[in-house]
Structure formats: structure tokens, C-alpha cells
Image (cartoon, rainbow, N blue to C red; front, side, top):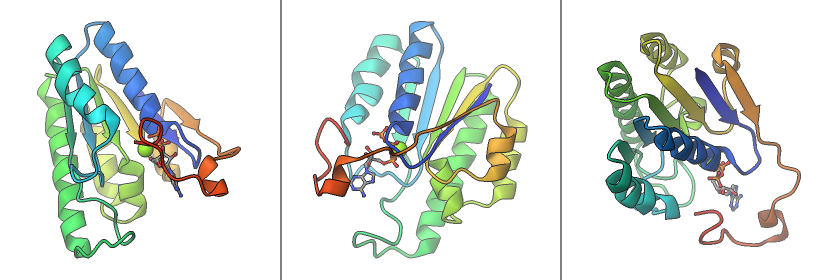
Length: 177
Ligand code: ATP
Ligand code: MG
């Protein structure tokens, strides 16, 4: 099953985490890799997914494989550095999906990496083609490419009906991160 969570509203990454928890509870092995997001910007789920959940279930791998914001919020890194990090993350996701060691492979924010041209559509499609039958895959992130949506068995769009940041409310610990 190939699932895509996209759209401008809140809920894409947290939906993927929810699927991870559900799959773990059914004894499945879950691998989650985050594009763009880096360890320099910790989020509440990091310690739970990489720490206690991994310890409790034994079959959860979580990592942030990006270098942080791309071209915004003071990012001074060359685009090439972001591109290399995204390529490495995709290669790791492909090797993992093909290894037989995981049942669910989550590529968080991969849609954004593709939209920012850190990855090419061809290499993302090649990743999907390489995933063996029986391995579930989730892509998250805004701006999902039409070709990706076309390939999805299940695609959900989170629509922003309202969001507190539009009223100037800053991102809140425990809600946004
Ligand atoms: P979540 O991780 O909460 O499920 P998401 O994956 O759907 O959200 P992203 O597009 O990845 O959403 O954005 C990450 C977080 O940043 C979200 O929680 C969202 O509410 C918040 N966010 C998005 N845009 C802004 C903004 N302009 N200002 C402040 N926070 C924002
Ligand atoms: Mg997200």
C-alpha cells in the first residue's frame, strides 16, 4: 500500500506517526526517515520514536536526515548540501525498503524535498518501483507531485480551514513541535 498525506493544513506528519504507532501495535516493523528536518530542530516525537517506542517495540527506527530549512529562516547552506542530504536519505529509504527488515517505510516531508528540486521526480519514481510487494510506504509533505498522487493507493489532503499562525500565534511546543 502506498499512502500520501499532503495539503497545506496541519496533520500530515502526525498522521504518519499515528500510522507508525498503529503498525507497531500490530507487531510490524517501522522505519521513518525525515527529509529536510534536522536534529538541530528537535520535535516532541523525536525522543518518543527514536527512544522509548524503539525500546518498547524493538522494531522502530527513526532519524532526521535533513539539514534544516531550505533557503529560508537564515539558511546559509549551499543548495548542493541539501540536495546531497536528500539523495542520501532516499538511498537509505530504498535500501531499507528492499532489505526485508521493515514492513512500513515512512518518508516524511519527501514531497517538499521533491518540490524544492532536492530530488528529481525520476529518482522518486525509481524508489517507488523498487519497493517490494508487501512493504507499505507513506509519503508526507505539502505540494505532492501529481505523478506521486497518481501512483498512490490512498491519498489524503489536509486542507487548512484555519490555523492559529494566521492570527500571529507562534508555533507551540507540544502542538507544532
Ligand atoms: P504536523 O507535523 O503537526 O502533523 P504537518 O506535517 O501537516 O503538521 P508541516 O507542513 O510539515 O505540517 O508543518 C510543520 C508544522 O509547522 C505544523 O505543525 C504546522 O502547524 C506548522 N506551521 C506550518 N506553517 C506555519 C507557519 N507559517 N507558521 C508557524 N507554524 C507553521
Ligand atoms: Mg510535516
